[in-house]
Length: 365
Image (tube, rainbow, N blue to C red):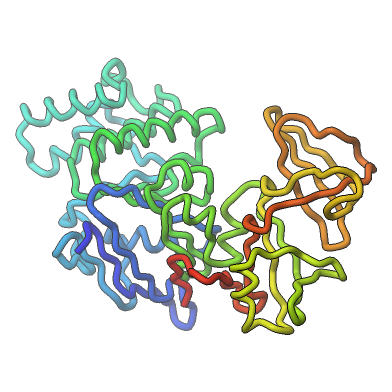
């Protein structure tokens, strides 16, 4: 049994199904990310873990203890909210100490914990200030400090960085990762930001419309996406998707033959005549010598500094290429592209499920 077990959890409001039988086993000390677009059910699931909402059916276990209907204060869980939720009339020290005081922790012990947590989060020089005198990043650290001081069995983070600017998000992301490495407390973190998901998580649960699409390590999610949705949601720019059809022994899109490795070709035996989706990560594509590979017209270039994104219109469909540095060419040029068959991801167009001889950990209902 893991540190946190979510078993066949469903949530409905009348005929509207928010969560559709979610199962997750989270190990002790893991940093788990719940990621997906707005409305996918990730915050609803976090609220049920916290005890702020109850499932329509299913169970939530913390260790060997069923906490499905246990009051939030009795769950041994600490939560960090998107809005900080600090008491404006209290100092930093009082905010960090407040939950301990409510739990009747002795004053001397409270002071030791506040000192320890404030030093860990570099807040020790701000203990006498009130939230209105702090920056957004400092306020978020205070909210984290309040949760840390409780020394809970489980940390919950509800999009804690979404109110911060881009530079501060990067800094706070690094702080949260270091904090977890120090404390090793089991953590569930909700975000819609795929960069946060990939950089922070030991494992990632990708959700869509109340359904768990895939649960795996960042590398598994990126390298072997279980569904077309996961492939497009994780990665920037998104994976290129070409609608194709298998007829006899070839896979083609608008008359263009698309290469397949031998293993993937063998896996297509049951898909004759069916519509398929041929996926390629932008970094898998390369510019090729003129007259070789797939020809296309360069329609747009987006330089980002260390790399550039080139948009190419081809007979098979529009493609985005990610290249290091600058693009050697200009808009309007005719270019050629190639790629390795091993870099191809193939999906059933109807079910959107990955086609492979060895399926990844797939949780789609």
